[in-house]
Image 1 (cartoon, rainbow, N blue to C red):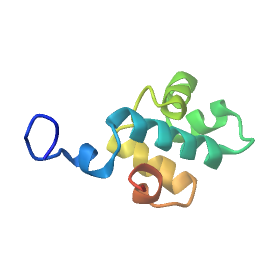
Image 2: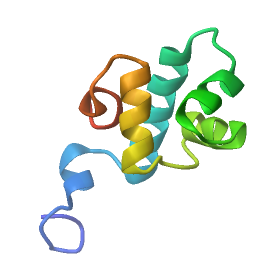
Image 3: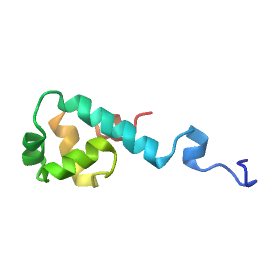
Image 4: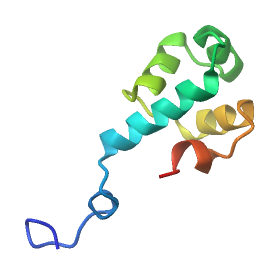
Length: 85
């Protein structure tokens, strides 16, 4: 039970918040990009450089199609990048 006496949410049960998960995902994306400029990643997946920056900073989460494109680009699974703990 949480402080309000309810069952814990998925995030409470894991000890994370949505913001924390976005931040961790952003860090993974930044590490995977390495020294490749953001504009090259943006061109490859069909988004703006601003989107890449927001994905990496945790201010925005890509949609399913963009997640798949990023996973393909980095030769990883969507789960490894976006859902790993």
